[in-house]
Image 1 (cartoon, one colour):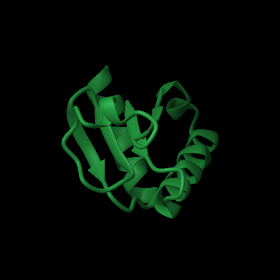
Image 2 (image 1 turned 45 degrees about the vertical axis):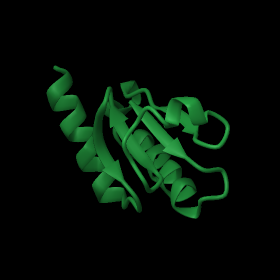
Image 3 (image 1 turned 135 degrees about the horizontal axis):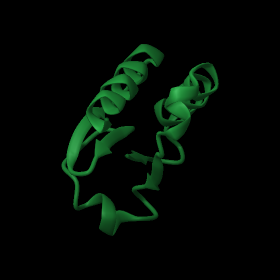
Image 4 (image 1 turned 90 degrees about the vertical axis):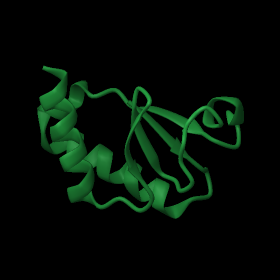
Length: 86
């Protein structure tokens, strides 16, 4: 899974906090690897994906989420990801 972020984005920082909390709460989430990509640092990679808002989560080329993310939304993304990964 890839997550596109901006260093100065408060929603990205909040999403990263939710991800950490969820991984601590549920051992099944520990195996979900998330590659953080700062779109300003890695613009060549970011330009290959179709999104406008950050944070943006992708599984391969499939967009899972874009924009402000709640803890519950990230939990649903993780659950769906695990269900499809089996």
